[in-house]
Length: 383
Image 1 (cartoon, rainbow, N blue to C red):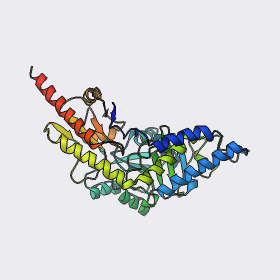
Image 2 (cartoon, rainbow, N blue to C red; image 1 turned 120 degrees about the horizontal axis):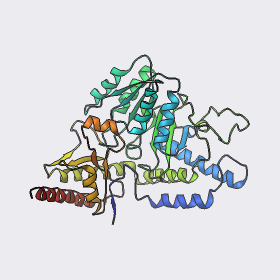
Image 3 (cartoon, rainbow, N blue to C red; image 1 turned 45 degrees about the horizontal axis):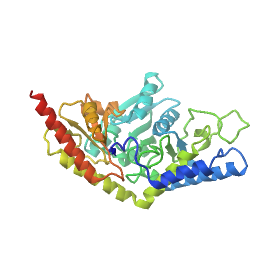
Image 4 (tube, rainbow, N blue to C red; image 1 turned 90 degrees about the vertical axis):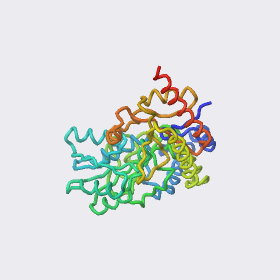
């Protein structure tokens, strides 16, 4: 039996309602939304708009400002490259996922923008000051993950949003590890929210979201058929059409809709509480072994993610041994080079991330398996 503690990558299993929504989408919504006046196309268009309304209601946005993408990486690339299309200065945090760090670094390497990286501290005020100190007259955007995908550290994004408002800077937020677990709203001061549909929102893989407050125009990096203004060779300049070229994933969008409805029905706070209790129990069990390093700081706040290492064992080797016992954990660099530079984890970490379907009992058993593996390693090392 597989026990999935790699939900920060993709939640599994999915709620039954999401599975039903996917099946219904295949069965009933086989038209091409916005492309045709026949019943099948109209029915599909209405279903897609309903999904847009559900997302908008959950995040406090307008439906027309909800853009469906193939994943969070795609959304972040659209936002970063679209906002910085005419150059300028950008600030990112030292905890960014490569999906934000790489496009920013690529633009800087080509000389199209200048880039600064703000150091993140356990103390929120120090982190906010770190961002403030890098703002200059040419700063056009700040990109900030709401919660690190490696350690789960929650950044003071509302304070950073205030800085952006004060300086008329676009605030682009990566919500991949926060959305669905913490109460993220556009009214928090976010101008562009990018997130995954297949993680905390419990949709299927191949789903993501870009949500705008409409203040900043995002130049499209992909152009093509939108179902609107089709007689013109010029890409539409209104959302969501300007950023949704090509046939959208109806199945994906409806799975995200069902995932959000599941969260609202179950209770987001209940989900956070459940996952937090499991993480805390897991941490307490790990701390019984003095050779386990847990990457958390007392002053910082955390989403339900735990990164750790077992002595000097390579993370991939440890995770591979634990996988033989049925435990699914992520090991390595987690697509986040900047984070590991800050942590000093030259070989990466092992990451533990539960979901609403995880059990505390399994977390305890995993901690016991970690302890047994460490003890066995130490015993055999002496011979």
